[in-house]
Amino acid sequence: MIENQEDRLLPEPDQISQPFWDGLHQHRLLLQTCSDCGAVRHYPRPVCDQCYSMDYSWTEASGRGTVHSWTVSHHAFHFSFKKDLPMVLALIDLEEGVRLNCRLTGIEPENLRAGLQVQVKFDDVTDAVTLPIIAPLTK
Amino acid sequence: MGSLKEACAVSGVGETAYTRGTDKHPTQLQMEASLKAIDDAGLSPKDIDGVIPYLGGSAVAEEFITNFGIEDLRFSAATPMGGASCVAAIQAAALAVAGGVANHVLIPIGRNGFSGPRIGTRVRNFPQFKVVGEFEMPSGAIAPAQLYAPMARKHMELYGTTSRQFAEIAVTMRDHALLNDNATMTKPITIEDHQNSRMISDPLRLFDCSQESDGGAAIVVSSSERARDMRRTPIYVMGVAEGHPDSPSTIAQRPDLTTLGVAKAAPIAFGMAGLGPEDMDVAEIYDCFTYIVLCQLEDLGFCKKGEGGAFVEGGRLSLKGALPTNTHGGLLSQAHLVGMNHVIELVKQLRGDGGKAQVPDAEIGLVTGYGDMGDGSLAIMRR
Image: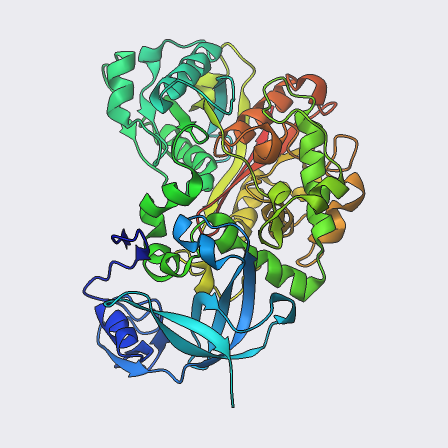
């Protein structure tokens, strides 16, 4: 993780994770899928913990999920987030069985509850970097 | 297979003044605390033949050799588990002395938690936070308060645990700190004060969070055989273990958010000691946040999962309660010395040096560590 000129915290991808970030940049949520046993894993890593295969492909996730837990942050631990307070950070159970931990927008904090249906959106925070962001599911 | 049961004892402890503001470098602070601990043990600094520096602290093993004129340091290691490091280091020290590699292992810590960079900045440089650094911090989930709050929220959702139950813990730790001359928090608080303290990362309020401190703390762990003939009453380590939670690099991917690494360490350490939670006269439980105390009480087996909220009600953790806990005031109200202050407090209690917070006739107790994304460690000691 690095800070850019505006001192925003940005990811520092490596060889393993680069395709995940490239996918986000194209507004696609890509997840590692084991080529041998089919297990989906996240965050990106070299080995499948189910069958120990090191072969994998990247498959596009549906982007749909439900709220597992959350926090409403009233304190920015980096000044670049002060303008966003209070902000909701949510753990999302994706349909594919792994989770995201990222911003959730478009809902009043008092309406948050476990199981709330949500979908992934894409936040182009710089020309080069896109972060996942969560919003309530719209049919 | 061998056992580490009573392989080692804490033979010396040392602390600097704990402050919020200092001109001293962390290395000075840990050298000062280390010299006090070595003196307490009745040793010369040259007698130290093992050292386990705190990863994330300022000094490495080599600096202890240089400062203390140690001619033959035979053992050094690191236990990079954040707040679980200090108690995990006791396990490493036990292995070293049980294996005959070393006789006297120094475990030091010194920090400028208040005067140096604060936690939101520090964690960005921790190797253990690499995964969170890439995938969560850019979205704003940076500090432990923000990363741990969803665990507390999940517990509240599943079991009906309340913020007022968290407050019981905060108030008890403060009450204990008021009895301690080396505590940085000196004003009493009430449950209402806790409820009115500002929200940091819901459900964690300011008074649910530990503080930033400056100071040094150190212990000497010696083989039990040698400790018997040393200056102070040996405090024997009856059981010790570390435990890592599922998905240890990120809480987000953990199947069960409400179980910590110490749940794996507890049966090992209690089994080694041949004791159970009901045998503890005193408990020093890592309290970076109130909720983390509540969750560990469950994971240690003091109550069932989900019952921690009710367990802490009614002053059970106070000096007059059934399980006097964090008799020094803890990280919440004494100071944040990464839990080395908890280890030292347990030793003091079992020596009968607990001062105004002494638990009468305390003979057996436990100390836990908790760190990073849920790493745990546990030591059970007796006098």
